[in-house]
Image 1: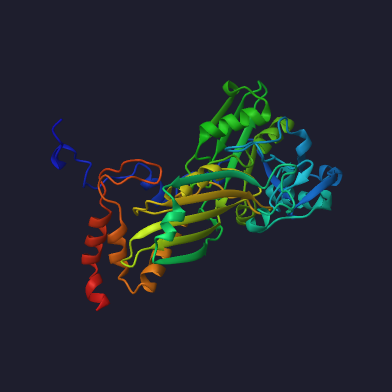
Image 2 (image 1 turned 135 degrees about the vertical axis):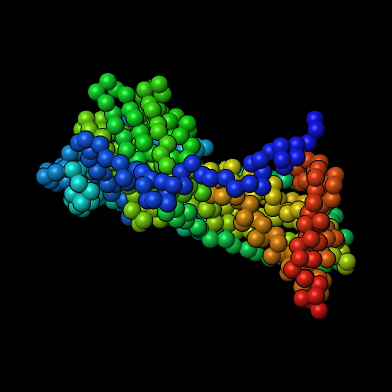
Length: 425
């Protein structure tokens, strides 16, 4: 096949007009918060506000008696009260136990958002506080309280072995050890999570949602509601930001059941506080690196231990852990390598999908570690990377033979462009 030139592909290198840019520029884009249907109700979810507890009683009578309240929903009314991207370990509304402070325990549909919010205060929940885990390193211990008893707090493990790290360390002239931590990060999309559900008299459910993965969301709705998928229509609306944070259902089953109870469409738009308290975040990691090097800076052995804080539910933690494990050694030739990675439950906000899926965390760690090693050896940080970087035909830690490898060329070009050598003199 003859390669196409730029003239043959006019889209390459040319200005392109977004189909929605005019509406955005004029402020005419319709987001879910802008949509309204006849007879529409507004939903709010009562959050637990406690990290770990047994629910002894939920009293909704005062809320149900309020003027303007159309329906109240609790976890006991959810047909199948569990969902999740990997494991179905997350309740739609907590009914027996609370696993983190952002868990919903009841929901209200009312004629106005204000009435729905006020009704939440009328719902009385009696809790029996239980031991909680907030540090994943504590969660690793045998005697630690179980977040999801009787199951272990470690719900995913990944290991990569290559060569013989003991021999590699024995042959090393220097051994360096470092610990790195990354924090929880909220997506902070301009538009919060929002949805509208309309369960019609014929038993068909239509959902307008900010979901980024509507096919998986539709499957989760079918499962939690015990409704055939051919009776569910999910419409993806224009979304004001995602970054991975809108890949899973949140309030959609709640809105659907409130609509079914009332026979009216029900809208839910999270507050910024709910975004921080109840939606997924980037995974915090604790990363231990031990690297053995020769006098000239060549890496002879590396041992990595990754501990992922998944929060209260699995979400996309297993996927994130696997990617982090594969990338943990960086773009460097290391013949003797051991990477051990663990995903741990804690009673904290759930960590889920976010740009990079574990790659930004380990990249921060292994590149910081390389800088530490270079400084200790009095080497130029560029030189130690050029010495150890992948070449064409190098094998990844999982045995993949790499092609189109331009790590060294990229480093040299970048160093040339910003005058690295001159700046260091």
